Image (tube, rainbow, N blue to C red; front, side):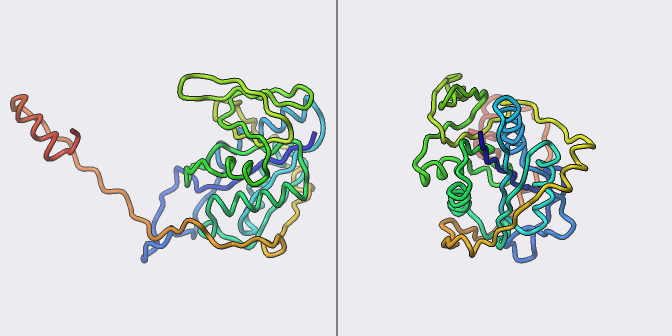
Length: 251
């Protein structure tokens, strides 16, 4: 069984983010990155399925050449090879363009499954998996908390508002991983050493013949408002309700 799985890099959530002076984006000098946590769950599930059913796990990502470091992390966990589509920086992508790039990689690789994190913690859009399945006209199962393979079907337990839902989706299919799907493994020292020798193919975005025009444009960024200190209130209920309504805008 052949599995494509995403390894998107995101800014380290513990890093201090600074905006550019023109508020067109964030300052990237010295900024630290890490694999998207939801992608880590997708990678772990791809490795577990591979251990059970055999085949190949191919890690895919989009961005500048230094995104190779994120792919190497997945290779150190146990994935077999990587593909990096270059020619785009983070600010030059939206969910639709990412889905169309992945659709082209799917057509080249013809996997049985395409696993993605359900969303990225930077944009939090939760759109790529659904768009990808639509472009490929194949089945999808999003927010997976359990995946089992039976013959030519993937049996997926997914998290919905009312609890859990179990569905069967024919392969090939797109599956997006939730955090409760598994506990991602750490890369071992032997795995890190082996990852250095595994191949990462770089593909220029221009060779895919994709229109890179964005459907969503980010106009500007704003820092969140500084939170004020709390106050001690000793008045009556009516005055408290009035302050909550007029000052705190809580009601």
